[in-house]
Length: 343
Ligand SMILES: Cc1ncc(C[n+]2csc(CCOP(=O)(O)OP(=O)(O)O)c2C)c(N)n1
Ligand SMILES: [Mg+2]
Image (cartoon, rainbow, N blue to C red):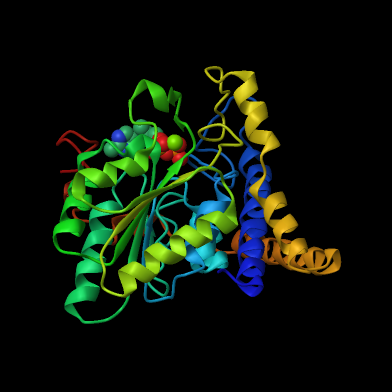
């Protein structure tokens, strides 16, 4: 049973994530007209928004502590917020500022917050092996920390995911894999890449429990995830969960979605896990005033983070040479590139 206080926390996280992304849309579009130059404006680079995925991040992370590890995909904001990543430093990272989580070098797909053990990556399924590593470390250290890897349904044929399931199973590791099934991998519908409609069945090949949550119902996600996290914490091994979410927007900002049937876009807009959770809260006796107060608090926090981030300094260009595996040879800056530039 997930109590009303946890439901309220989940609601706040989901509202925060949705409003955060609505505000990022405003900021992202600045300077990108008339030609869509993704490097222009205050938020450079790609931006993948997770509106419609919030139930999965909040429903899973409500069971996690700071010492539990989460690895996320290229669409990470809702998960990062639910895991408790510092919203100001995350925003500064997205705006490419010096005080960002990665000193402005990673952007929105590369958010690393060691204080709450969160990481994400633009490479799909990439988070699975590190989550297995974190789970192995927790087990070797005799702690009851767990790890959770989130990935999209478009990533479940990646070798890294399947190898991770195998290692997790064979070593009984405290890890939970969460597939966010939004039916699309960029422009590729799920049924064109797999005959297995229920991705949680992949668990069967590894003799693991697999559970699918058929709708983006945050309460249902929280109940299933609660069992999986407890199973991992109690030393009883991994679980694979698939959650049906929906993509309310394009794959990334600037995606005209010409490939997507209008009816599918409409269907996604009709379903709103945030409204659904508000109804659940009302049925637990939470008043509309309480709900409004939560929304206002979330909106204020988002505004504070964005205002703060925009005031942060840009990194010094020289910093591009720091924290990298290799640097260009000393001559590269002066030889006009004749020697091939970076090695
Ligand atoms: C290993 C790898 N191959 C290809 C890509 C390019 N790519 C970026 S997102 C994406 C689709 C991801 O779909 P899904 O996993 O379902 O996540 P969603 O975007 O739907 O949330 C692809 C193929 C990549 N980032 N990494
Ligand atoms: Mg997808």
